[in-house]
Amino acid sequence: MFKYVLIFCCLAFLSNAQTTTRILFVFDASNSMVGKHGDIQRMEGAKQMFNKFIDSLSKLKNYQFALRMYGHTVKYPPGDCKDSKLVVPFNMKNGLEIIKQKVNEAKPTGITPIEHSLTESANDFPDKKARNMIILITDGIEECGGDPCAARQKLYEKGIIFKPVIIGIGLTIEQIKTFECVGTYFDFDDPDIYSDVTELIKTQKIKKTSAQVNLLDSKNKPTESNVNMTFYDVNRKKYKYNYIHTLNKFGNPDTLYIDDFPTYKVIVHTIPPKESEEVKLTEGKHTTIPISAPQGAMVVSRPNGVYNFNEKVKYIVRHANEKQTLHVQSISTYEQYIIGTYDLEILTLPRTYLQAVKIEQSKLNEILLPSAGMLQVKAIEAGDGCILMKKNGKMERVTNLTSGTNQTFYLQPGDYVIEWRSKSLKGSIYTIEKKFNIKPDQSTLVELYK
Image 1 (cartoon, rainbow, N blue to C red):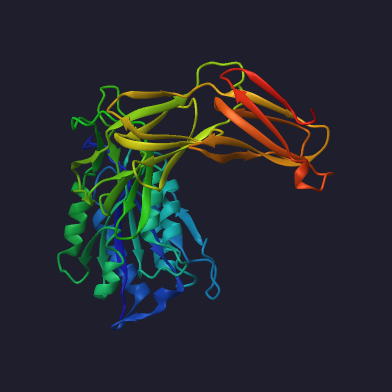
Image 2: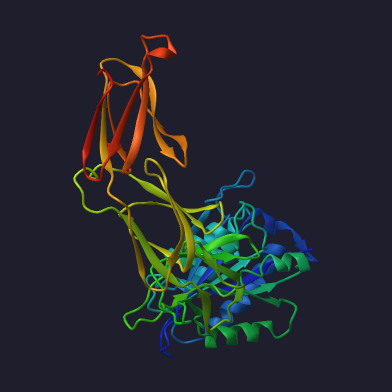
């Protein structure tokens, strides 16, 4: 069954009614157009459709035309997925007649790179000052593994709005569904199709679809900002956009102009992350997406001491009474968290545990650790050993000693003991025990050979 589609894509818009309208025809001259639709070849049917539209559109004022073809130079098989070229640019003398000539001369030849051709079409317009449109004539069969939806996304990324209208012939329900993410479908067999589409081209204005993400504080005010957010296409199960949330100069969430087709879910990468409900945008309207994300901040630091300059201590942040790690943060650094209660495991020697640390809206919780002391351990030869601390009547290992003869550790204040034996002495009886005390901001020397 012969099928081809005509896709009208609005790429840019100016509200002035006298603005020039540029129409770029993208014509499929690939080998797949050789098939039959009833008694007519696909290519001949496409040419007839093209000529009717060109004759209708050529009567309009302030219009310019150009032609891109694909699949027209490299014979299939094997074809070339880059076989797409601007054949007649805008502002060419007698351009409309040349366009008709090139289309009428076209013979089904190569392969069908729809996505590549649509993406390249964005570069065919001299600028964005005009009302730029694309008319794609194709049999609708992408043969290069491309995706017109992906092309639409790429055009958006270039700042070009791509809102198509699709006219198809002989498409099955399943085939029509493949174009749902591309635009609105019309049936070629509708006797009013030419007048309807021509009128649409003359009157169509880009209805800019916009959204803003309101990151709500504990008072449901959209004051939170400066955090990454990802827009996911729920149906296609992939992400569409990544932005850093911003408040404009008036203190309001920034307006985003995005594709209205997908159903979105927005993930805000706070600690822990927050997400929106599923959101369906309405074409031409502004949608507010609220997400509860009240935040406060936390910093763990030590008093300014002599021996903490090179200390690289991190700490693990978890929800209170939970085991899953939410974040790992370095001391003396500032980080925001969703308000709530957290447990901290600070990787000091020995480890420091803080329970039920509260994060409150727009407040900084400053947690001060006692200053560490510096331990220097010296030995005349390599050995094995560890540092222990007496806790709750038991000896708990703090850290092992290395085999080096000079070692430095930063320890929390308290009473410790070192157990050590020289590698050259092969009896446990030769174990040396050294007790010592660590005081904040003081250096302690333990010599294992005395």
